[in-house]
Image 1 (tube, helix red, strand yellow):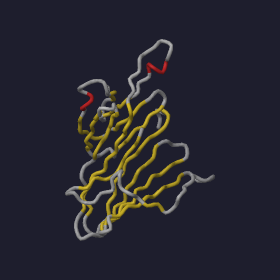
Image 2 (cartoon, one colour):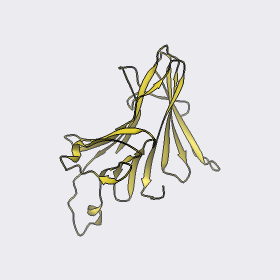
Image 3 (tube, helix red, strand yellow):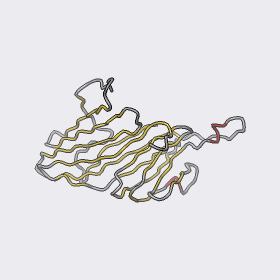
Image 4 (cartoon, helix red, strand yellow):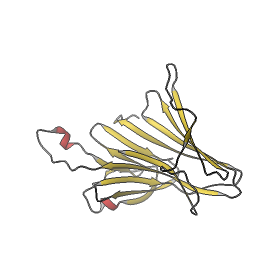
Length: 202
């Protein structure tokens, strides 16, 4: 599957989406012996005064990866944008068999709305067009022992949705609220991506 993330700008302005080209100061980053974390910064600019540095931070012993966007707006106008994250995965229907324990494991999208956890069935017509807005939640793509989850900041309401295409690829996504980075000012967007085994404490 793919985890795609970026910022969507209002008013049709240039934007650092997952399709944008970012630059890196190095070709390799390593978590060296004795280090507890390493940050990988990637930089994008529109060439007109707007610069966004998207950073991934990897911590020893943790499968949670904070994603941070630092926005420097040296353009003459305000810039409005919202962060988003998409978990994209191909769904393969599985026939249950008493000879295959894996066939009983759930593989698909799931959502937590801040109060309750729910698995979304890619084969259910209502779930295939799921849409909701809430704060304090998260979304995930599940498989037997592993999970990829996206966790936005707790305090703001995010728009969640599930879409399934003709090839049975599902896209579980969220988009955050619009934030304004004033001309001559800086701004920050943050979220967390978790990719790893189902460790409940993490």
